[in-house]
Length: 191
Image (cartoon, rainbow, N blue to C red; front, side, top):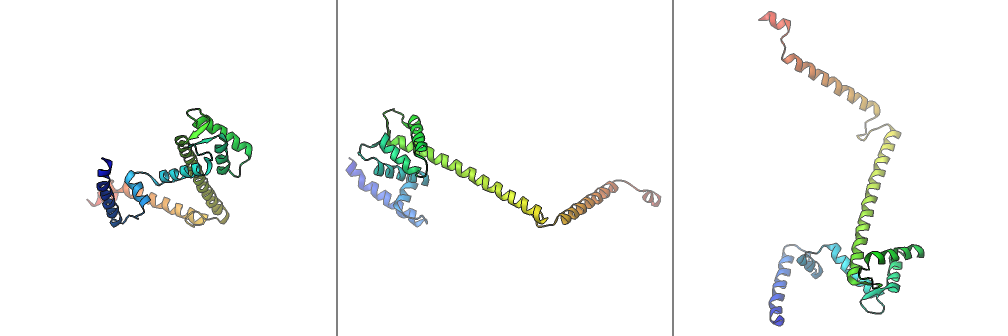
């Protein structure tokens, strides 16, 4: 049954891939399949990392990372960390992600762990970006204080003059508005 469905399925996929390419899509098979399946680039990268993790650290080939293999993986991920820190992180990961308590990380458990690591990394990146923006604002404030100019490059005296002019214009506008609806004594005499 499957053998009969395979040729038409391949024809449909080839046609869709060609159409995808003609629409301006970059036609790598990985990107086409990713788009076809609705997976994000992060999902594809995480899958690639999962496969690399097991290829490099599942030394006994049983499809799971035992404590020794997973500790080596953790050591690889945090190569600058102290052994005691890596051990603490490794122990915490087993408590959180070894769902079946078999003292091994299965592929789904490692996939969940990688997803969590990505989320933590994204949060760190967001905090770092906020810190950079705050530092830029502080730098601008310090630069303003040091050279006596505001963000528009006006000196403090020019800024004060601009504010004074704006205040005078507002007073003139208010005077004009109040006179529009009132008749003056000269208006009354002329009528």
